[in-house]
Amino acid sequence: MSPIPQNAALVLIDVQNVWDHPKWGRRNNPEAETNIARLLRAWRESRRPLFYFQHLEQGPDTLFRVGTPEAEIRDIVRPLAGEPIIQKRVHSAFMGTDFEERLHQAGITTLFITGFMTNGCVETTARMAGDLDFHTFVVSDGTATFDRVGPDGVLHPAEEVHAMSLVNLHRTFATIVTTDEVLRNLV
Image (tube, rainbow, N blue to C red; front, side):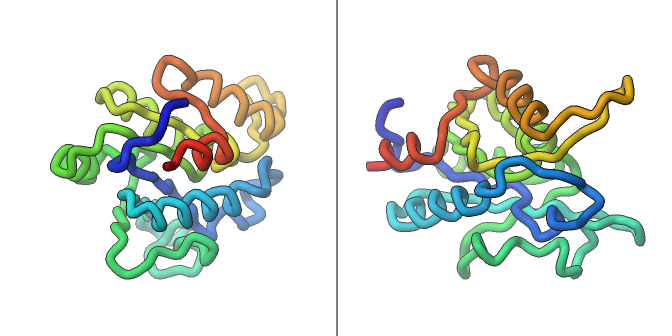
């Protein structure tokens, strides 16, 4: 990995309290938020751009309802005044938002994506970023997911779901890196 450009953006996807809800089940990578916070501190110190995404939905049965504690961004990565928070209603950070426009206006071509869930909004955003010709990295230990039941009824452990999602992205849509690799190259 080469030195990270000064205008590379850190992207925090849906790092919200909602992931503590028991409905999701067992999760992998309990250190994801700690790793994201380490990256966030380094990004702020280096004065590189960053973007928060907050998934919000309408309706009485959603856990992502506007104004609820579950929908709030976690305290460990709480945005500072002036840091951009883009609200989204679908899996991709690019759909229904002005994210791509903001990136182009700022001349940002490199993205480091973190957040939740690996196989959901993170993977969808990384796929679109790659297809839109952004130089895209996904921080493997800065994302996490949950056990999932497949269409055949087989339970797949979160570790397996996480790994397969990263395999699907690697070299086609994004480069998979670790927090430590990123921090070593953030000069």
